[in-house]
Structures are given as C-alpha cells and as structure tokens.
Amino acid sequence: MDLAPVIDQLAHTLGMLPRSGLLMAALAAMLLGVAGSLLLRRFPWLGRSLRFASTFALMAVLLLVIVQLSRLDPRFSLAIPEIGLPEQVVEGGATRVPLADDGHFWLEASVNGHRARFMVDTGATLTAVSDTTARAAGLAPRDTGLPIRLQTANGTVAAQMTSIETLRFGNVAAHGLDAVIAPGLGETNVIGMNLLSRLAEVRIEGGELVLVPHNPQAELAPAD
Image (cartoon, rainbow, N blue to C red; front, side, top):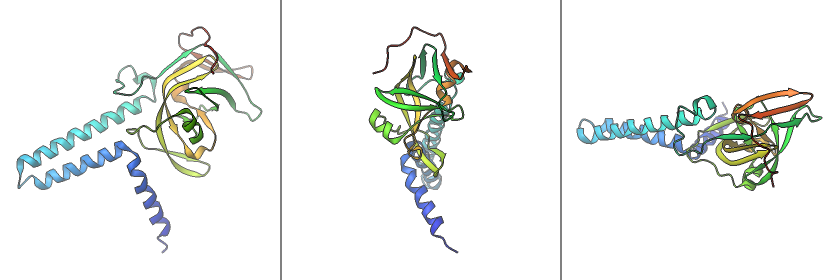
C-alpha cells in the first residue's frame, strides 16, 4: 500500500494548523484541560485551576466563532456585538451592472483605493479577493479568523479571513466588510452574499443587475 499520498496530505494539514489562531487557541485550551485532569489527584488546587482556565478559554473561542459566523448574516448583527471586529455597513445609491458577454455580471470596484474587477456571484457565501488584489490593497489575514476551505477548479485550497476597510463600486460603498483571501481563484475577485444580503434589493431588470442599498443616499463621488 502506497502511504505517500496519505503522508503528504497529513503534512499539508499539520502545516496549515498554525495559520488559524482560533484553532491553535482551542488546541492549547484542550491541552490545558488534560494537564489539569492529570494533576488533579496530586495537586487538587492546581488541577482545578488549569481545568477552569481550559473551560474559560474554550468558551472564549466558541464566542469568537459565533460572532464571526453571525457576521455572515446581517439579521444577527443587531443582536451580537462585534467584539473587536469592524461593523459591516453597506450604503449609497442604486447601481446597475450590465450583463457581460460571458453571461456574468462584472463590475469595476475600488478596494481600499486599489482598482480591481469583481464578478457578482449570488452563489458565493463570502466576498473573495485574489492574492494579487489583497497585496495591492494592503489586506492582511485576520489572526483570529475562522479557518476557511474553498473548492476551486484546482481542488480544495486554504483561504484566510480579512476585513476590507472600504469596497466601492458604482454608487455603493461597503465598510468593514469580511472577505477571504483566496489563492486558488487566480486573478478572479468575487462579490458574495455577505455583501449582497446587506442590500435592500437585488434584481435583474432589462439585462442589468440592479443593486439597491437600504435607505438609498445621494450618489457617491467616483472612486479614485
């Protein structure tokens, strides 16, 4: 039996562990709990302290996971505090995106002042940016971000969470938007449902995609 593929996959998985701060924190908390259980009989006070610290740390990790998952659905943003993460706001005026020859809706956007082309994809949960766009826009991976795995044409790849300070296109501006840095997407950038679901209306009209924010405001100044 050839174990090389199994060993390679295991090595790849272990190599990805340090990239998730939440995962490493959870593992450390569990090890703390195991140590507390082992010491409980000989040093009761120390064992109980370690187990209490483990439980508290795991609860903190769980809370961070819940907060980050809640950011994918704007209905929960009113009930759950951001806890150190930027508030996600989408504002502006109605914007029309024409249908391209390839059957997709493409738009020109500004990511923290850097211009990039995005495809609007209602089947994508999260907005995603390529490595190239992330570097040009100064986007840094979030240390406490959830580990994300994306299915691409080249297979499953690991992606890292980030926050976009300002994403602008047409008359729409999104602030504090969650996104993933997706190396497996090549040069493609995607507008996902975590932005679209924060709009009042998304409809197709006369071969154009119409995006309407809540409480539409005056038209925004053109992006640089």
